[in-house]
Length: 408
Image (cartoon, rainbow, N blue to C red):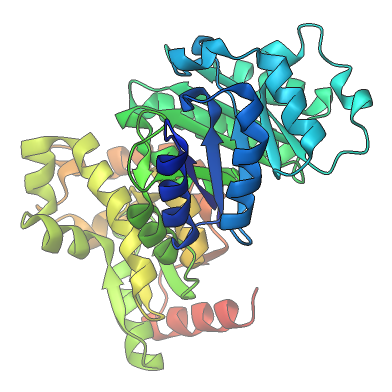
């Protein structure tokens, strides 16, 4: 999982504002700038000079040049330009690092551009945007495949998300495409407020570029550079935690305490972190706000693991039920699954009235059913599996320590 490149849009109408934005980007902790030509109030013949000026200002930062059409969310001002006249001018100039071309326009009788400019250094980003809706997962995967097959060096797709589930569809589609095309760079994102997960965590699923802003955004839902950099610094800190997961009652807290005591490393638990942040007990959050609200807080709080020194971390029983949580945890260390029989779990927790998921269902049969529903998620997340039935806690701690540190 690699840290995404951060790209900032340049949306000035006239050269002085374009230069001002470029100067700010040059001094910022980002990797790329995208000049949005559809915002430009000047004439077509001025475009090459602006590109030369920007490349001279941005030092080693890469430059994308984009003329976005109104069909895919561009400014009305851009309609004054002849689309492919501008695009070909950018390619033939061969000064910018990338040119963005909308794949539907490229496929509409302009595929000869690859042969015509076969010796170009500038790379082509094939893009697709839908500002109305989030398409189905298959459509996203197929569109990225179309872009790749066309010969574009980078694939980009951005679609509007109304819910976090729709944003999750973009992440899942990105992962599916990257599973089959691991070396092909893509930039994928869900636009809108609900799409924030893709702006911050797309790199965990294979996206190579995220778009952030130092001022005016060029698309709905872009996050600030400060927020993106702060999140990435946490996410890719690689602290090497020992992360304990498993069903409630499998011994996560007890084993965590034993590892901390025996090997002298700090311990933390995600439920405790949530309680500290919200000022509420877990059962209160479930009762007052519902499970979905709790899961969102849980996902957000995991970023803080990236600020901690190497620790043993005990996770809530449902933490790995969200794929994004698994992606984050794998970036922070080794995931150890603790297992136990339903009868063992019942024996350990049957007097505990702080388990909201077992409220009114504290029996072996229900525990077994719930464990069965979760086993696939647990196993897909685990790097190491350790049984805790009828075993000494120090023995369990030693096994985990040995396996984690030997890389097993």
